[in-house]
Length: 282
Image 1 (cartoon, helix red, strand yellow):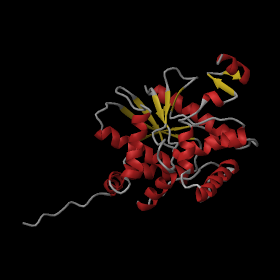
Image 2 (tube, helix red, strand yellow; image 1 turned 120 degrees about the vertical axis):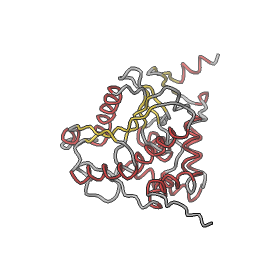
Image 3 (cartoon, rainbow, N blue to C red; image 1 turned 135 degrees about the vertical axis):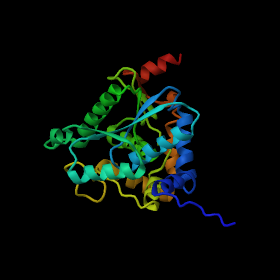
Image 4 (cartoon, one colour; image 1 turned 180 degrees about the vertical axis):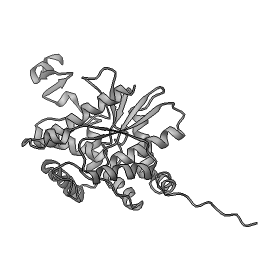
């Protein structure tokens, strides 16, 4: 008897690649972050925030698959804000959502119009405004968490940037309680997933996503030149040539802070200087 195997659909092959070819690099590290930082719990209703880029669409697919296979019972809302995309970019987001079978809920804002003439740090202002809208829309839908697609590489770059450009030791936490939206928590399920592996998964599946769709960069084929982040990324790449474990070392350092050696600490908006800390040791 000849048995014929049913040919998998495009989305099934994409999902299969996460469970097979990229299981170790992506799926296992995704699950590691969920368990290590207790990101998803029974009864959660999570708004997975999709910007249209590779990171957020990967996050959406992983969360969808997690819901399918996990014993933890939780609800998902796939939330996408249109801050003023061009018709072409809006269409690209919708086409990718359809391809990946992600049921996006899209809402419109005028953020691009609000920041287009801002000269100083328009990307920072845009990000802050986006976050506020996402919290608000998620809360309206009864969610208690929003999931963002920051990954391992974002974490270590942000940590190093804080020291080099911000004169502070500050990391990007895997989850964070909102100060402005009661009962809302931000989670980062891709916390342990490397950017290079996300790019490899995208290329393997021949997927095309938005890079940055704002008015400043919507015609660019690469990421916008955020000079501080680009310089930090290049520095890490250079160091990696001499210290292969440098990325893991930076990541592990934020899990292994020696408070007794610091000369100043800020905790819950209260600052402690060296003399206060020194006196407490007596």
